[in-house]
Image (cartoon, rainbow, N blue to C red; front, side, top):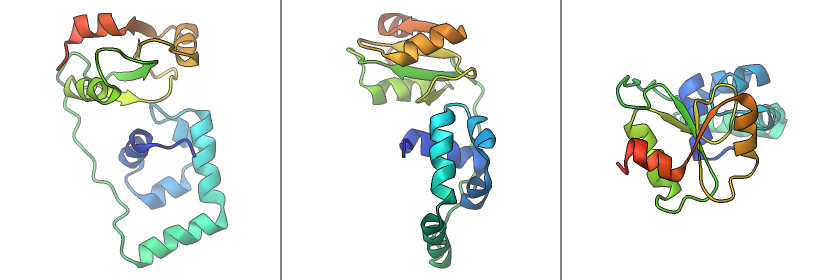
Length: 153
């Protein structure tokens, strides 16, 4: 629960294998940029359930590849090494276009705001992510400023 494709990719990259992920503590999980306490608790609870451990064992016996090779982080681009969260409804860019642009610029798009977040881009109706970012002192910019600074890709 709470784990979409972006978060799954972050976890795969951070832990490298299903076995390492299965043994991760909630603290280990929240050390991953973009993974907050709610997601960490959900992942830990999933692996703690015996029926899910059985699913993993069956996948292993079926020789399903459950390891993720490390990708090389390219240290170039205006957002190199930065963790960026998008919140609210963007008008000029789809969420995928914005996330692709962040990746092209060397950044890492994530779903949740934490102390490790470097930038929050917000659109209409941003909700609690914007206020959490402001409380944490994370830089926040609206979509127009994002496009002005970084272009459309």
